[in-house]
Image 1 (spheres, rainbow, N blue to C red):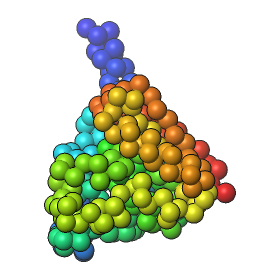
Image 2: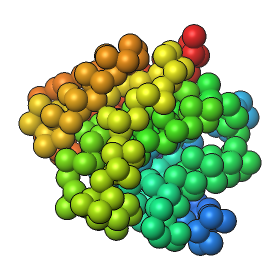
Image 3: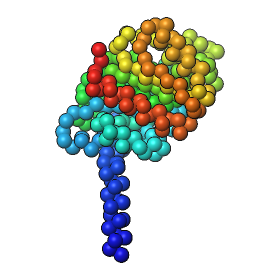
Length: 273
């Protein structure tokens, strides 16, 4: 009996040590949208030592919410420990696409994530309050969002990534409530074109933003990611680009996030050129 109890305690301790990171659900307030918004904040085991740490903003996809990553890929807790970084997963109201909607003032998720949430984190947590200590990435809609926000806020984010990102929304005019954020495509084609990632690479200053982009070969966003890769090459924008076997699935993203966080760790330790 004592041996069984001892083994049980060892097993429990092993689980605790495996995920020494702390997971909090915080309530933040958006002045722009006049409402409270939840976010998951993962702090690594070293956070208690008091040293400011870098932050990775990890965005969810369409149809999901702030706790999607931590529920479906709990290993992100371990990665926070591995790379000694804070990971923040904000809520984007299912299908905000991380826009400040020009047709609905109640949807200002660009302002919320890139300004309000970043400022809130820097005020309430021990963060590196500089673009050299901030990265942003996400899956699908979140991949679009991470690139959209980082392209438009290169003063805020030093590194950005995308996993299976919806990087050309003009190819999907009837999907995922995008029309509710930008207006119908047939009546607002130029607005859609102006707000799609493949048409925004002109905003990038070479070597200013450290970029990592990946997509599965069998993903329905594969062709638009190839299109983005070609656009970046044409603009002489340095970036890491990877195509792996896989589709638009959590199996793919659970694998991809390991490489993205490793990449950001290199950025945090090296800093931009």
